[in-house]
Image 1 (cartoon, rainbow, N blue to C red):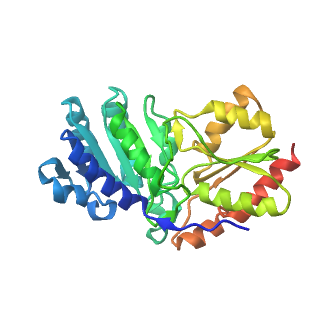
Image 2 (image 1 turned 180 degrees about the horizontal axis):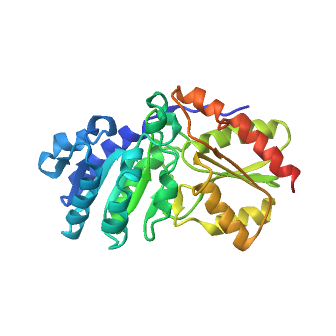
Length: 317
């Protein structure tokens, strides 16, 4: 039977977690970019107005000020939409945050094409590639709202620059709220059989789709291991190589451009350590306006297409 999931908003979860952290740590400050209601950063601003700064649509300036606050021993969280928090201020992030390795946490919502009707210009499909290219950055893409809480808290407790990728719509919950031990740089094994034929390595909303695909394939007699690679930098190369050696084929799943994201990272690890057949489920172009469901179907990011990629990888074993 194909797995069904309830849903929850990662961006709302982020806003609520940020308020909790603000109560615990007086050094946390939040910088927003004219979209604070949408990112739920307004919840922090309502409770801690003296520690909340709205810069309007001036993302380059936001990153520069965040760097200054971090250099002054504050713990700044910057939040806006993914296209505005990664593409537009990339030079400021590179020079002012990454190179001095400052303690700035960039948390971006509305990532990927499931931003939907906002259209091509608002679809952030390059953000992971950009942020993974920055030495010293930790890059996280939580699979659901439960993991978002852990990721935000881990970022707050860990020195150094972070990029965290969240979404506009409510997304499937794949974790139980209790007992989940999130560790930066340590992949999570979501599904495993005795003799798995292939491993699906997924990130973000791709995790729930991969679990659904694995469930459907199991009914056909194909056993799939499913790995949640929530940390892209530093990536868990050990988990990638273990999966390659034990299952002999890999499929990566991401709602991101095919170059520079999860697929590229996994391919690099396999090429260096243990080459096996690899298929990538990812975007190969910009999308257009449409509902999240329509776009995921058109650009082949659904469980059905993950299943096809699994079969293609198995055929090459």
